[in-house]
Length: 130
Ligand SMILES: [Zn+2]
Image (tube, rainbow, N blue to C red; front, side, top):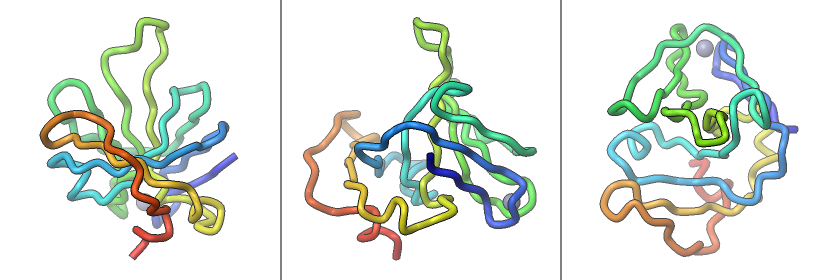
């Protein structure tokens, strides 16, 4: 179980699955947020709570951020998947315990041009912290 929250603590997540890789995306939203994403489904692997504001990217991605401190905590995918589940993706930069996620490998996703996964290059979450 990985837990996380925004700076002020209003918006929280629980991620209850094994994380094999953390996605860094270069799309025109993610590169600005600097988010490191772990993928699951709402009310399955991922539970969220707290009052958020939403930025809608097109009609497919809802980025949820804290109204008070501005942290981007998670995004939800639309429409629902064919199995009726909603993609829920948490930002591991919000992890309560950075040591718990620091050694996870980074998966690079080219969300800017090709929309393809790129090969791993050996970098870990701790290499992108700062
Ligand atoms: Zn907050």
